[in-house]
Length: 482
Image 1 (spheres, rainbow, N blue to C red):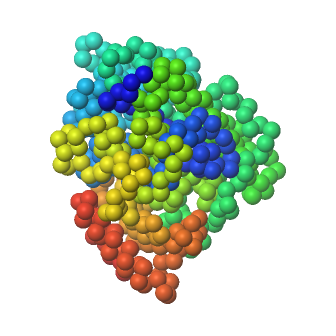
Image 2: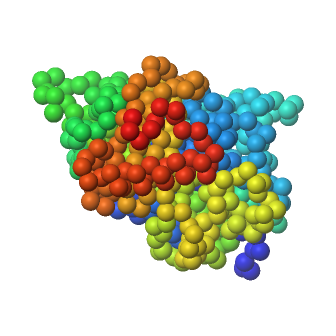
Image 3: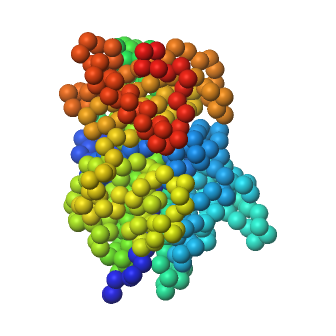
């Protein structure tokens, strides 16, 4: 079959899937053979990061190519203005058939429902794992509820494959498959329900990290094993007679096994999508992306969830396969961020970035990185900001920071700043400094130690430069000596 001048796109995004729960990334706790097929046929990006490690803001950044202070989706209580430019809209305008199935989580109603898609069917809010309902457009310009029986990961994939079968075969397509899994509360399907029953999952190296020396606000977050709800999260009552350490270990095993079970279902369904492309003879003509909206703590530092700027939460898995552009089995270590995804895919798909991408879009195409030709001026640092201060469930402080290839500086400015979903009180500013070369697990906070004055000044200057570059406003109280 002759190669299309304009490739197709299959964009698969999960929710809270940590890169270190993918075997292509060297996972020590599970195997993901179908995700590994994407890595084997394309590039694994090892330094892909989100700019705000929470669901709605990261998804908005991906779609719009802008940071959250620009697109307005700073917290879970802010919704996407669907009149904003998005890269799927650009594809549709350029002639691609477009469809979105699965998680949206960017608001509902006429001002927030998906636009730029010929067909869409989405979960309301987070949606449910079993027998979920979906929302889709009706014929009168409104929406209707569709009740479904089955498992959510299977159903989303079913919708994707059905749309592919029914598409116009003479036009290129861009399909967005957005899974709910492996988001909390990690409810496996029947096929994987007993997976890992006969094994103990390895504990991460930092599982017993007591967070000593870290910022006090980090030590106070509610994301430890003892913060997991036995009924909704662990689906069992705590066995009697355990010591505290024994209970913490038991809680980890309950949590991580269900997490990995729902990941196994994702992997199986990614395999279904890849098999469809093979059977249709379209694998060579289709860009396949697998990513997640952010990373996740899998017992790392004794925690679950995300939000913090630590590596396990900051890092996004990002696997991209396109035989025409990307060498099979390649690995990229250049820093890329979620706002870069849209411009990159438009570039790979042959659009004119100057003509088809508005000037306000802040992401930059990393298509040259995928081709193994990193530009000399490619960024060597990235900017992060978490806005949802002291939310009701996790008590994570508002913070921002800079990550370079070798170091990380985090400012916990600890102030809600009137953001929707952020809550008082504010508190003292705290800082953390990590040497990622000497301390890749981020257990030694170097802030304020003698001998770090030079690197601290350098990182603060870079943080300030990045804030100016992206047009963000720093907290007025967060000076380097605060």
